[in-house]
Image (spheres, each protein chain N blue to C red):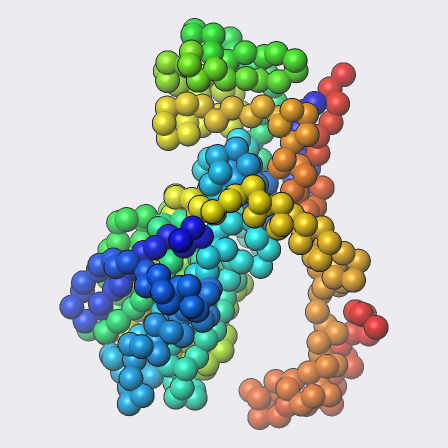
Length: 277
Length: 132
């Protein structure tokens, strides 16, 4: 099926095994895209008794059929696993370049299984996949890890990494990519830490096919012009999203004091009256 | 017509490269685009740079097989005449000319005066201008 690369990369950290398998086409057809397809894989492969931080839990990095094409908003990577914060199914998405690099490396998904005995990182360069020692990176923050890994592997690699929070299994630890992008929900970083996986470093040089590239581009260009780059939409681009402060405060979901409170009396100080009326 | 790049407007989204490769090769791959954008962080700033064909015509001069011609204000590659020697790629001063993986150079023909990359740029960083 065009759009998909048709290949899943599986990494078993316990036995240090790396192999590929065909993407389940029926599932791809039934559960379109990153989140749906990722959850289907998790649902089928991880049973209800499995603890989030156990070796039996899996960490699924799933792209979508539009990832790597011109389709707007298609560049996010879905990270699906069992959450150490809730104990149930978690989908958390992250922006940046990682999803596109995974797809261009030739995979629709990377599924991490098992648990390494020592800190490792995963290096993916198209068909070449290596599990490498992360002894020199363990303990470092995400920015430092990413910058150092780029020096070691190359500036054009995309890095998904965890910091000390993930290493120490903090239940809400993030995964960071491109320095300023975070998969922030449900503790995906902690699951990565439980597998002793410090980082995923990926670069791809391949392309993504569409069944009808020209038609896809026509539709996408139309969406850009008529739905995205419009006056009613561009406020977020020009002014940012501080209008969400007021919305979050009034609905009680404004994280305050590490979310001990959902409201903040001083919200006006950093809120904004801009945005759509 | 000539393409002009305004780095201060570019946000490094690379849609131009994807649109170019999709349009010309039927495949979304920035490595097959006829222009190249590089985006890198320098301290806290994202620095974007572009390599574009500036129609210097060095490739036309360099082609001993006369496979690259400049006619009607645009470059044209005759794949039948091209001998895959890659001398045009070596001679390209901007470095925008790259091989397509089958030995042919990815030559920018300016999309008959209506460059697809400029049409896709959401920021107006790529503009097609008349050459005097």
